[in-house]
Amino acid sequence: MQNELLLKYGCNPNQTPSRIFMQEGELPVEVLNGRPGYINFLDAFNSWQLVKELKEAAGLPAAASFKHVSPAGAALGLPLSETLRRIYFVEGRELSPLACAYARARGADRMSSYGDWAALSDTCDRETALLLSCEVSDGVIAPGYTDEALEILKKKRGGRYNVVRIAPGYCPAPVERKDVYGVTFEQGRNEAKIDNSLLENLVTVNKDLPGEAKRDLLLALITLKYTQSNSVCYAKDGQVIGVGAGQQSRIHCTRLAGNKADVWYLRQHPKVLGLQFVEDIRRADRDNTIDVYVSDEWEDVLADGAWQTRFAVRPEPLTAEEKKEWLRTLSGVSLGSDAFFPFGDNIERAHKSGVRYIAEPGGSIRDDHVIETCDKYGMAMAFTGLRLFHH
Image 1 (cartoon, rainbow, N blue to C red):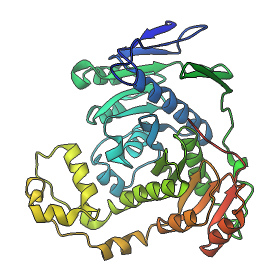
Image 2 (image 1 turned 90 degrees about the vertical axis):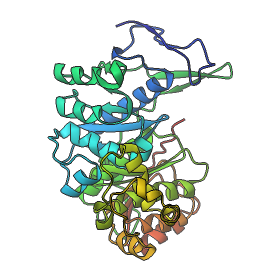
Image 3 (image 1 turned 30 degrees about the vertical axis):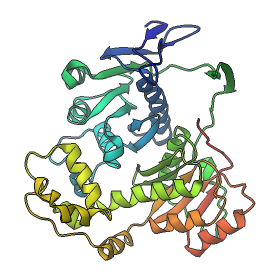
Image 4 (image 1 turned 60 degrees about the vertical axis):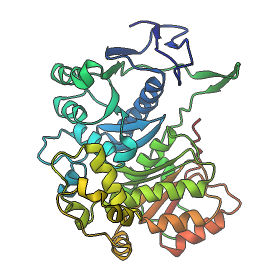
């Protein structure tokens, strides 16, 4: 270990010099391969905190896929259904619980996860390393790597893949600082513990909060703790299915995350599962094409004949009515918000994406209207009393 690590540059190539360092003691990380940059380490430290807390809260291996200091996905190491294996393109693979967690985290929003930074709560094993080896990814942080896993990862990107090991017992100082425009900001670290006690104040008529819903709400809240605010997170079956990050308006967060959740579910439609791509299509082109196929832009692709370079067989369009009918079957979704919902319009939008359970701080002058809208749809909502802004 060392107390300083020089970097190529900061956020942009013109921002030099650049380094990470400890004012006291040694850095808690060791670079095992590659040369991580400034943004890489921002992603690494934020994503590591997320998966570490997820593991502690749920008692299961956890993984996250980060881009630009916000999660594109986060998940627990639960087994994958055959449908999820297909839409995450891991059919036939041997998957450990940790590999399942990363497949879920990476697969929920494959477009946003392209070129991600991965975080793993447990020692990276062979199955997870093999999964990482086939994805376009900038690097990974974990508390350790098996010899076989490290050998696999060192071959990625021509030997330049970033592999970082973090000391699992590292405990940061209780006060954190950063400089902005030459001025130093100081605050106590956000050490708020996110557990089931936050879900006890159920303010709706429906007070039924099953164990799986509690798990998914905790997943959403822990994810929000490390997401650039304003932010809203949809979760289902132990994984994030949509994140709306860094929006100035909360309804825009809710719409953005809801649209991502809708795309996640539309990818499970039989027509999408039946798409026949050309043999040599690149993974990114395939993912982007699926995203367009379930969107309103697909007619333009058909019109200009672009489909011919992507599909072996011309696909039948997924009609607007078919999409509506399919999305009506999405249910049991959990939704977390990092601050209170100011109006019931957020609940109306959440309902369209199958949301049944909600956790938010409460405290708006329109809480009564928000609760009333939840009651309209039979939702269960807990006021956590805890704001989770992250900047």
